[in-house]
Image (tube, protein in one colour):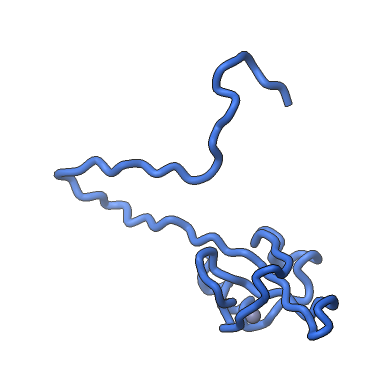
Length: 102
Ligand SMILES: [Zn+2]
């Protein structure tokens, strides 16, 4: 990867909020921002052994199946869903996640 030129070296990643053009005109596209999911590890009481992975909606504390996990637990992006990396996976979370994701 090459950087070109000078100047804008830093591009802020992440969602950019666009100000809504106010006034008239109703937007017909009822497009909701996609919910960011993440996958969080549940460990066995020994704190070391992985029990299973759970799905958490981005801004929530509890897993989708209603567990509260250690905030320091391992995490991965929901792109790992369905792969070896996120195995074994909580059945409840998996089912709920499937319902929410097209
Ligand atoms: Zn779960």
